[in-house]
Amino acid sequence: MPDITMNTWVKLLFFTGTTLFAGSSLQKVQAQTKQVEEKVVNLEKLVIEANLERLLGNYDKSIQLCEQVLKEDPSNDVAYFELARLHDVKGSDDEAVRFAKKAVELSPENHWYHRFLADIYQQVGRNKEAAGVYEYLVSKSPNDEEYYYKWAYFLIKANEIPKAIKVYDDLEKRTGLTEEIARRKHSLYVGIGDSKKAAIELERLVQAFPRNIEHYYLLAAYYEQIGEAKSAENVYRTILKININDPKASIALAGSGETGGDAQVLAAMKPVFGQADVSIDYKIAKLLPYINKVADTGDKNLAAAAIELTQILETTHPGEAKAFAAHADLLYYSGQTEAALASYKKTLELDETVYLVWEQMLRIQHELVDYAGMHASAEQAMEIFPNKAFIFYMHGVAEYELGRLPQSISSLEQALLMSGKDGRLQLDIRIQLGKTYAEAGKTAPSNEAFEAALALHAKSAEALSAYAYCLAQRGENLDRAKQMAAMANDLAPEQARIQDAYGWVLYRSKDLQGAKTWIGKALANGGDRHPLILEHYGDVLYLLKDPENAFQYWTKAKEKGSRSKTLDKKITDRRLYEQ
Image 1: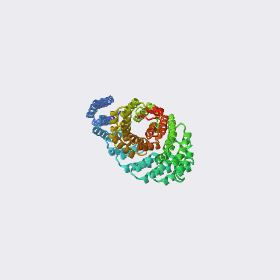
Image 2: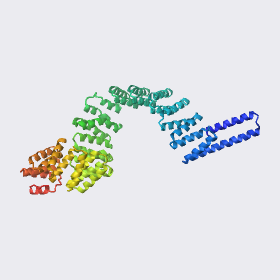
Image 3: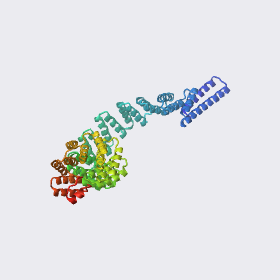
Image 4: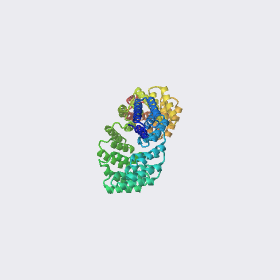
C-alpha cells in the first residue's frame, strides 16, 4: 500500500480515536471507521485503475482518474507522482515539474520522487536545480556514493566545476581515494586548464596504488600531452624499476632522444617489437610517426630502419594484416613501388575488408601501367565495396586503357552518380569521361565532360592537358590546345603524361622539333613505361627522317602492350600511318 494511503489512514484513525475520548458512542465510532475504510479502499482502487490506464497508454484517462483522487484527497502524493509521470510522457515538461515538486513536498522522505524530479530538470536543462535535488539527497543519505556522483554530474552540466570538485573531495573524505574519483577530478582540472592540479591527481593515484602500472602509464601520457617530456621519462624509468621488461616504458625511453637519431631510436625498439604478448596496435602507434615522416621526406635510411621493424612485426604477428600494411606503406613511400604492391596484396589476403589498402593498390597498379591487374583488382573490390565511387572510377580507367570503351563509359557514369560531394573525384571522373568519349568518337559528350571538369577546377593540369590532347587528336582548335597544354605543364611540371600531351599538340601543329623535345622529356620522366608515349616518339622520329629509331620505339610500344590500331602496320611496313 503506498505511503500516502497509509498516512491518510493513520490520520483518519487519529481522528476516530479523538472522537472516542470525547465520549462518542461505540456505534458511531464503528460507523465512522467503516466509512474511512471504504474511502481508503475506493481511493486505492482509483490509483490502481489510473496506473493501469497509464500502462495501457491511455494517458488522458489516467490523468482524469488521478485528478479524481486529488479531489477526494488533496494530500495524496502518489496521485501527484503519477500525474508527474503522465505529463512527462506527454511532453508537458512544466506540468511534470509542478506535479513532481508537489509529490516531493508531500513526501520528502521518498527518494524516488526526488530522483524523478531531477530527471525532469535534466530533460529541460535545469541542471542547477537537478544538482540541488541531489545535494538534498546526499544530506539525507551521506553514505550513498551514487548521490555524490549525480550531484557532481549536474554541477558539471551547470558549469559549476569548482563545486563539482568540492563534491568529489567530500566523497573522498568518506571513501578514501579511489581511481574513479581521481580520474574524474583529473578530467575536470584538465577541462579548466589547470594542468598542475590535473597532474597532481594522477600523482596521488600512483602514490595510493604504487603497484598498478596502468596508473603510471596515465601519468606519463599526461606529462607527454602537456609537453613535460622529462617528467614523463622519469615515470617510465620508475615503471622499469617495477618491471625491467615493461614494453611500453622501454619503447617510450627508446624514443626519448637519449639513444641518438631516428634510426637509433627505431633500432632500440626491436626487442619490444619481437614480443608477441605486446599489442600490435601499440607497436603500430609508436611506428606511425616514422611512417609519416618517410611519407613526407622520402628518407630512405629512415625507411630502411622502420622496414626492419615491420619485418619483425610480420614474423611476430603473422596473421595480422596491419603488419603487412605498415610494411607496404614504408616500401611505397621510399620508392619501392613493386615491392609495396606485393605487400599490399599480402595484406588483403589476410583481411580483404580494408578499403584504403584496395585504394592504394589500385593507384599503384595504375602507376605501374598494369591495367590488366588493375582491372582484376577493381572487379574484386567492387564485390566487397559496391558503394565506393572511387573503385568504379578505377574500373572505368582500366576498361579504357584495355580498349573496352562502352564498359569504361558505363563504369565512369556509375562512378559519377555515386561520387556525391567529392569534388576531387568528380573532377577525375569527368576528365576520364572526356578522354573515353573522345576515343569512342563522341565529340560533343567529350567536350561537355572536359568543360564540366574545368568548371569544377579551371586550373586543373590534368583537365587542361587531356582536353588539349583530344583537340589535337582531332586537329581542332589547335591554338587553344597549345595554350592549355602549355599551362598544364606550368601547373604540373615533370609529369610524363602532361609533357607527352604538349608534345602531341606540337606534333599536330607541325612543330616536330618541339614535339621531339617534349615527348623526349616525357620519356625521361617515366613515360618509357607507357606504350602510347613510346609510339608517339616513334612517329616524331619517322617524320624527322629517322625511320630506324622510329621502328625501335614502335617495337617497344608493342612490347609494352599497346592497343594502337595502326601500330602493327607501322612495324610491318616500317612506315608511318597516322592514328
